[in-house]
Amino acid sequence: MIYLDNAATTRTAPEVVEVMLPYFSEYYGNAGSIYGLGSQSKKAVIKARETIAGTLGAQANEIYFTSGGTESDNWALKAVYEFCQDKGRHIITSKIEHHAVLHTCKYLEQRGAKITYLDVDEDGLIDPQQLERAIRPDTILISVMYANNEIGTIEPIGRIGEIASEHGILFHTDAVQAYGHLPIEVGKMHIDLLSASAHKFNGPKGIGFLYVNSKLRMGSLIHGGQQERGRRAGTENVPGIVGIAAAAQRAALSMDKKAVEESRMRDYLIRRMEEEIPGARLTGHRTMRLPGHVSFCFEGIQGESALIMLDMQGICASSGSACTTGHPGPSHVLMAAGVPEELARGSLRFTLSEENTMEELDIVVESLAEIVEKLRFMR
Ligand SMILES: *Cc1c(COP(=O)(O)O)cnc(C)c1O
Image (spheres, rainbow, N blue to C red):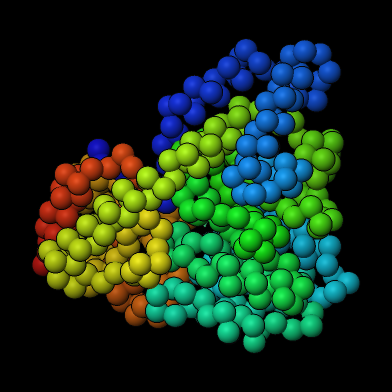
């Protein structure tokens, strides 16, 4: 099998699993209990929070564990909207956000929110000047993703944060694709809220976090006990929390080396596809893109058909995003980037990890070249 769908999810690193294991059957105490077994869990949670905070230049009390990226995005948007109603109801986001943000925005619109969806250029980049022009006296939040899951483009987050801060507006970023892969400093980048998810950086599924600037007093999304300082109730997922911290630490330590290796493989794959497959069009920005991210549209084919044929050869890839599969119609991201609808139907995404090899990439290019030719012939 050749796994090239790391933007959908990653393999939990064996060393991460190993650190988690004792917290299932050995140290299984409730972190809220006072006896020794419980305090062992509690200590692990405290340590994990410190580890995560350390990777962002944040304080431990600014990290809230959640069930993943979707929950973090929902919480950030809904809580800010609820909390800032005195100031206004206007939120600025982009047309290329993940559905966890876009569908939450739609929900908030039904409850009176006014949302501006920023355009992107053909590379998928937001224009900071357009953002600045969209700001109104009642703007309470800017939510722009750090890097796009479908086309890999890295947004000018530093500049966006500056603009938000100059205007006294809160800034949330969905950093689910970026965290663990790109360096992030919340202070320097003027980020007030940040979403991340463990299974996108070799941690377990079902655990993520929301960073919330301690200056912000924000309401809770899930009501109940006093866990997560009363803001996200429910018995802590201790193995998951230990796992996300182990994965975060592992990612931080190997980030630079991995980025170099992955971008070398990425650029090789891009070059070979452009050379070997006629009618291959790269989507997203050529250089300002996630290290392991390759995305293309192939003229005259359906992405889904190619995926099935790749799967028969043991190659796992994706068409746009896992969340759009099963959705009819072309991806909202490609539409926003101005890709013609016909071409957008032939979109394929290959997302690498440090475990991939050049040999695998050669196999993928050869297989795909044949598949594309076959599909075009069959039309
Ligand atoms: C995967 C992803 C999410 C959702 O994260 P989950 O942990 O799967 O809920 C949100 N935003 C982006 C950009 C993603 O890639």
